[in-house]
Image 1 (cartoon, rainbow, N blue to C red):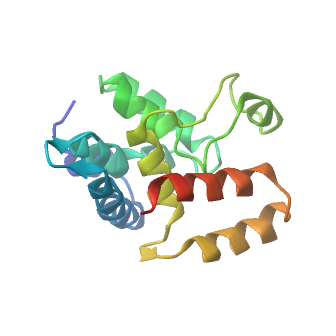
Image 2 (cartoon, rainbow, N blue to C red):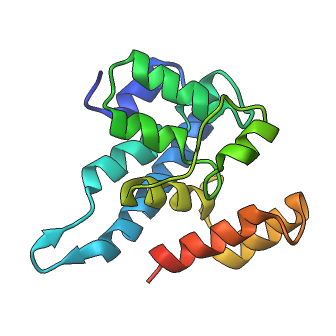
Length: 167
């Protein structure tokens, strides 16, 4: 495992557009994470957030389908990355995917909901970056409504995550 996530992406031949997207997500994730600071320091692991954000789309080296999260987690596991980084990658899709929806999407059985604060921050930072451009929750909501329909449960999860993380 390289301690430099950018080197890991480069060494694996990650396309430049994915690297630039990951940098933008990392910057956004660090800004969100800074909301969780107090006078005794941070109660969110900003290094974990930064590394997880840089590596969240590593699976796109092999696929651009929704399965890129599972593929990315496997790549990171094979490179001996810690479980915390693997889980950020595995659970970053949208605002999370519960097991019943994962089955419909033909993902391996499991719950893909972000649980830790770091997982939630990276997932939501990814939602708020369109390519390399930062967008707001209204933009994302409208985009998802067009794609999934107005009442899709992912839109509820998106808005809930936004309320929890954006201060």
